[in-house]
Length: 74
Image (cartoon, rainbow, N blue to C red; front, side, top):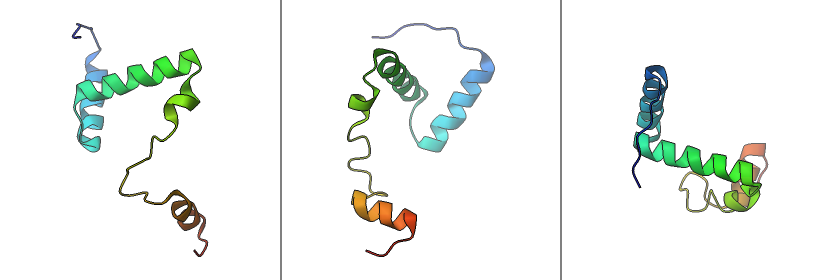
């Protein structure tokens, strides 16, 4: 669904910068923000966040990632 919203110019500029950094559209950032807000106010944030890092190529195996961050050997 599409809708119209008035957003201050400074916020639009910030969204455009963030979108460019993340390689997504402004609309995608707004969708993510609405979903995050909805999860937060509905109390489902933990359920909605489960598996959020799945499939990220920079993370790989979760345990190996933790150990790498903590400077531990495998």
